Every structure is written in C-alpha cells, then in structure tokens.
Length: 211
Image (cartoon, rainbow, N blue to C red; front, side):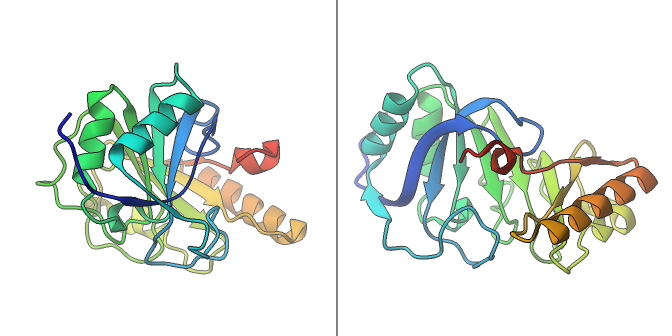
C-alpha cells in the first residue's frame, strides 16, 4: 500500500451488527465520517463536528483491525461518505487488506461510474431528494417513509432510473413518538403489500438497543 498523508475526519469507529438493509444482522466494523451535506433529525450521527478526529489511512486501518481482527466487512457511513475529500486512496487501502465495503449514502453526491473501479462492495442509497439517475453500482435503495417526501413513488413511476437488479426497501422513519413510529411502520406494510417490488426493512439496531 502506498503511503498517504491524507487525513480523514472520523466521528467514530466501532464493531457491531448491521442493523438495516439486506445485510441486517451481519457483524461489521463501522467507519463513521463526521461531515455531511445534510442535517437530518433522525440521523445516527450527531450533527456537532466537535467529537471528530483527524486520522490517517494507517491509523484507520489499525483501529478497524483492533476492533475486530476476524471481521472482513466495513460499513462506510457518516456523515456522507461521498462528501469526503480524496476518498479513493482510503477505499483502495481498505480493499488491499481484503475488506468488503458497505456504503451508506444519501445519494446527493454519488460519484460518476468512471470513479467506481472497486470490487467487493455494496452500495445502499437512502434518498433525501429526487434523483435524476442511479448508477449501475447502486445495489440497494432504502426509501424512507414518514419523512413527508413520499420519494418512494420514484420506484413505481420512474423505473428507467434504476439499475435492473437494485433492491427496493421501504424503511419507516424512526421517531421518538411511538405512535408516529407505528404509523410509519403500518404505512410501509400497506405500501409493500400493494406493490410487491418493495420489501419491508426496519432499523433493527434501534430495536436491539445497539449502535
């Protein structure tokens, strides 16, 4: 691996189980960036950048390995991963040590297909606004239900935007108010029953009481 002097703003790294999407329940190490172009109230990452630390690639690799020496999957989340400057060297370094990369993106800043030269990866997008295209490397789209945008309509009426084998997941927005949380869940269930192209997905880690 070539030496790099790049520093990355990291909010935290930890070892846990994937709590949402197709890989729910799979042990993974989490690499959570601090910077994002959005400030969603329901995000798992606090908005304040105060807790962020600047780490080199070598320091990141050492920490991830120390957290879980036998785990070969890393979730790259945030803070928006594709909002991070000079991301490619870090991704290449992670794959050189045989990590499979799982990205969690809001879709606003998806890189061009020319950027995407990585194998062994899974890209999940949770759109927060209408998108004009979804690159072929997108594997999973998590449509939030309860945020007032009803963006999941895109999956039904703009099918030409999506890769042919992309997984469409309806995910109820987790709210502190249990009644609103239940309403969001029931809405997802009804939409999925009426439109079988969707599957239901919930934020299991919040129900399990883990990160």
